[in-house]
Length: 238
Figure 1 (cartoon, rainbow, N blue to C red):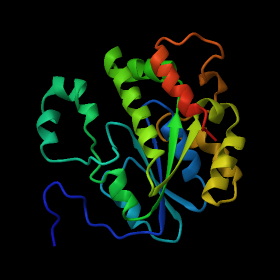
Figure 2: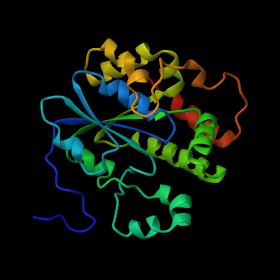
Figure 3: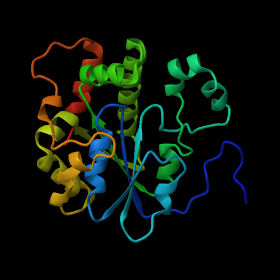
Figure 4: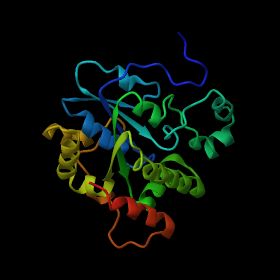
């Protein structure tokens, strides 16, 4: 039976699943690569069609998505979004607000015990990376980060989701400690292979974790309000 237009794809439920989310250019690929290197995790990067619920072999199904352009709490992709994608200006300036995943996070939570890992990066560093790597306007970059933080706050109150925040800065400075804490939360044993993530990164391979990518302590924030949101979320990080 075909799914109705705009409805989520029909997928088989699993006992539990891990979703890794963060703003674009916040380090989600590096974190996902580390988790995917674990022998008991089967991680998909940016799959938009429910593939995480089709994993076989007994491993923990996992998925990495970026917010807000790929995933949202209760909105999913709809065919009408294609009209915006066809217009270059609208796609660049408004398209990031429309999730491309065919499943929302609430859709996913209805199919599995959902563990949601939210990667949090210093807003100034995140915005700078967005401007440099994706050539977006400053206002758009700030809105992307702001919307991601809002999603993180929403997730903290969701009854069907077990959400944790991980700091990008702590991750690149102390990867073994941070990955160990994540493994404890997932009920897995830490594996040294996870520390090979920089070399295994499919898009930006490097020799090792680079602590210099973390924000400089004591640096004055460019946006005090956004920095306040960041620090409020950081207070609950692993």
